Image 1 (cartoon, rainbow, N blue to C red):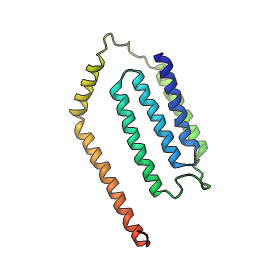
Image 2 (image 1 turned 90 degrees about the vertical axis):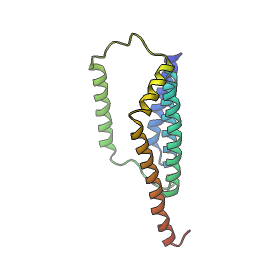
Image 3 (image 1 turned 45 degrees about the vertical axis):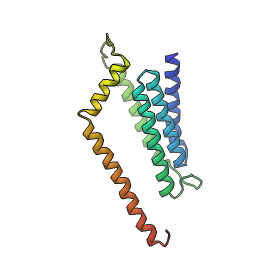
Image 4 (image 1 turned 30 degrees about the horizontal axis):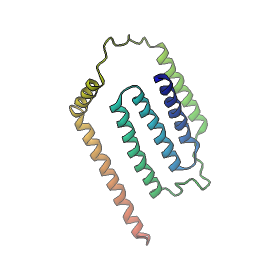
Length: 170
């Protein structure tokens, strides 16, 4: 059953990832990206990496919600009801995508992979080790990134508000 659900969520992730580029609505694109990343989180859950699965789903839900709100606030046509075309440079994009897929497939098939681990730590031990890694040497990086993103959101809002006041709207 694990293999079935892993394949199901993998196909769902790819399907929704393709859907991101098949719609003219930025909000629908954000939702499709949310569903794609949620399917990746579900794949982590199937592989019994509960911490990573829940973290993936929580982070993507928050990120895509914020992105959709900003698109509704600042896009001219966030619903995609106008005649907007989001398929710029279609042929070069397809060529790059196919070349990338062939490259990744070739690397994965030609790499001499090491044998599987003889002993695997329990889920509790894996979660503890990951927590120590994240709260150890990586904490400064995560905290700096969080403060930088918060500063960018506040700055973008502050820059947008005076422009609205000059235009006569409040």
